[in-house]
Amino acid sequence: MRQYHVLISDPLSEDGIQPLKEAYNINITQPSNWNSEDLLENIHEFDALIVRSQTQVSREVIERATNLKIIGRAGVGVDNIDMNAATEHGIIVVNAPNGNTNSAAEHTMAMLMALSRKIPQAYLALKENKWDRKRYIGVELKGKTLGIIGLGRIGAEVAYRARGQRMNIIAYDPFLTKEKAEKMGIKYGSIDDVLKVADFITVHTPLLKETKHLLNKEAFQKVKTGVQIINCARGGIIDEDALYEAILSKKVAGAALDVFEEEPFLHHKLLELPEVIATPHLGASTVEAQENVAIDVSHDIIRYFNDDTVRNPVNMPSLDNEILQKVEPYFLVSEKLGEFLIYLTDEVVEEVSITYAGELINNELSPLSRKVIKGMLKRHLGTHVNEVNALYLAEKRGIHILENKTYKKKGFSNLITVTFKTKSGTRSVAGTLLSGLGPRIVKVDHYRVDIKPEGHIIVIHHTDQPGVIGKMGSLLAKHDVNIATMQVDRSDIGGDAIMMLAVDKHVNDDVLQELLSLVEIHSVRAIDL
Image (cartoon, rainbow, N blue to C red; front, top):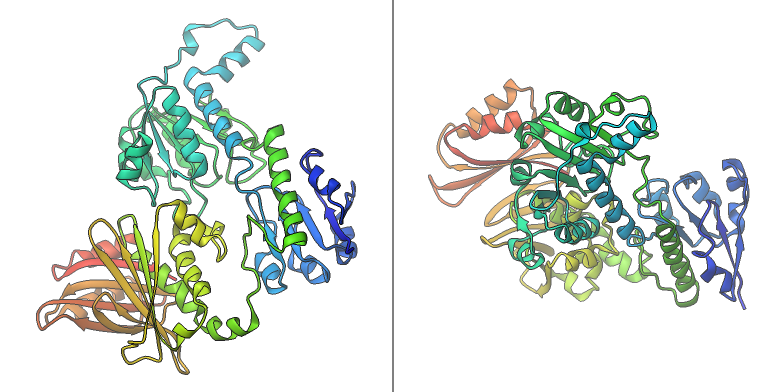
């Protein structure tokens, strides 16, 4: 019977790794004092590696891990694992996305209550032999409005608990619909809606380009005076300097923070403010959470060795070589189609229809569909989305996915068309591979175009009339934005038209607003692929 050797390089709950200890075909090694050199020197001996956040699983480690088949992360984040290197070497990475959900939600509620009743401040006063009841008058949660930005697993658990405190809930999430909100007994709103009406605001989004400093100076200008802020999600979602100024100005009454842009978070001016309470990243620091994540990873390691299956993969497993050779050339264009179209879609996507045409239809197409959904979701969910879990995440968000095949290829050897359905209608984009030229977007809605799905793209809908292109070009030139390529198509003479520009740098919101001020232009989108 084959014996598998598992290295546990970070401290884990003993109860959590009990399933591994009981497995008949697994041997465990748990060194107590290995450094990075020891890991490099010995990793070739192991079939599996389990880590928390301390061990850095670099490309060098993976390249030396000649027998490694699976890496388990006892937790959610995989920032300490070189995912590209793992995938290149055929190593599956699994994590434990659900094990700390309850602990993180409970910690958020604990911070919310401590903040509202000024418990830490009152305790510190007593420690200094000060009895000052009037100074620490708090507010009740009952009847107050809690704004939740990000309604994933943890955000939803917080909403459930806050309802138990008889709070009113308003939430924003890019995949939340009004219907789903009503079923949860909460109110649906935009980010601005949340900012304007909430008495308390808690954030539960991943840290992405779009969510970095989501609560910034401009956001704090929109909030109710006296709002209180909680962040137990990711450091960087809140602009800490802006929060400091908002508290000094009395716009924000207080903040409870568990995560920070740079950790350890010491000697920061925020900690000098009496309105701020903080903990050192304790959201998942419970006995139960540490045990749960270890159990989840242990079971996935056992499943992999015994059944060749895992429940929580975070990278793409190897495909059959024959399938891979036929569909791999379309991986990039498939993902870019989903990523491109989500930039053009303002409303919640209810249905995704993926239509394959041409020779492709004779192959297994699920890898391409997964790429499309990954591209669609990753703008809001970040690196948490991958080819393996994309369909699952879409399903959990109530997104219906249709896969169609047709021989009508419309002048191309193969064509992939992606259509998003929302409450208001549909948006679509089509792409293909052009011989010698690579991936191309060849259609946006009913307009025909030809543009590479990469870099910085501006999509402009306008009225077809003389001078539009000249005005647009002059405006971009004023802001030192160079146009690399341009595509234009129209529905009819003098009617609606589309202009797609590939430019050399990111175009900021101020430039987009100037473009939109041109009377002939109806909408402008900057897309960074």
